[in-house]
Amino acid sequence: MLNEDLSIFFDETGFAELATIGSATYPCIFDDSYSLMGIGADGRQITACFKSSDITLANVKHKTSLTIRGKSYTVKSVQPTGDGKLTDLELIEV
Image 1 (cartoon, rainbow, N blue to C red):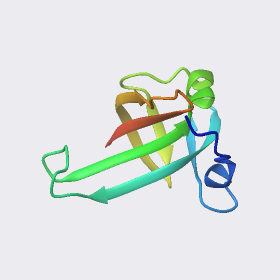
Image 2: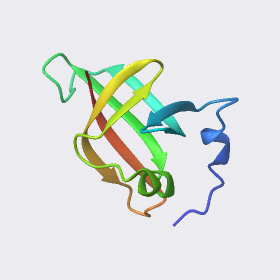
Image 3: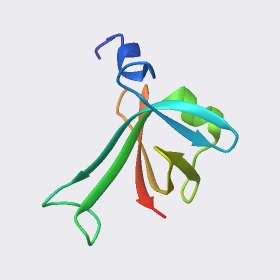
């Protein structure tokens, strides 16, 4: 396992976006892109990557609502990474 310092990616003054879950905000790596192999019918694959500890604190699960960049999303799936440090959320725009 790599023990990289990922804090630069979760710095909201730089790379990270802020997601609002309930009344709290958490930094995430946000990807709202189009893909030929996209999961959705419209070819959109929307994901947000969080530190696993933040997702645990926010008690995120399927159908949890959150806001990123002023848009509302619902969690389609929660996918922890192999080392458990990060969690990807697959999102559906509401």
